[in-house]
Length: 68
Image (tube, rainbow, N blue to C red; front, top):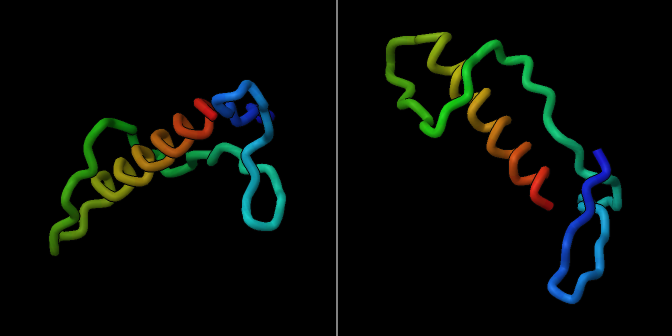
């Protein structure tokens, strides 16, 4: 994905990491369902809660990268 960063003066540049490599979207293989909430992970292991939290984080990060 080559989505440029938009600066106020109209200059566009790719979003790069500290080493100069382009930051790309995350492939979500968590099997979870993204939402607008990160659920509390309690002492009782619940795979669905953890998968959903990872899916939510991946979706939000990808949305930020897509707006760049």
